Length: 57
Image 1: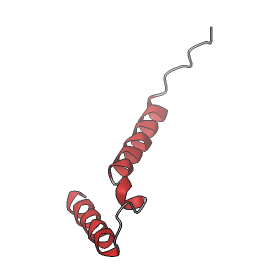
Image 2: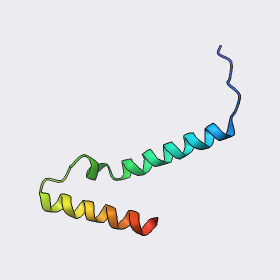
Image 3: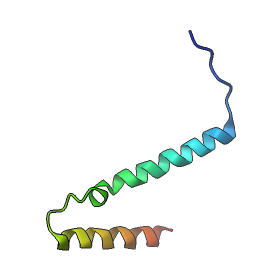
Image 4: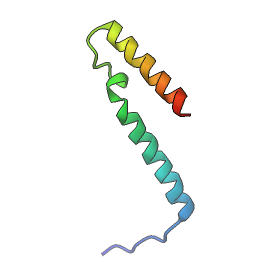
């Protein structure tokens, strides 16, 4: 059996921050991968993402 590494709160905090950032990116996966068929829908999705992210931050 492997030895359990010591708990490092600073490293855990950084890891948690990165995991949450990836989770937020996955919420907008349709925009990142161009799932929309028409350019108009794709542009509307980008505008929506920009509006929501600027409103939240």
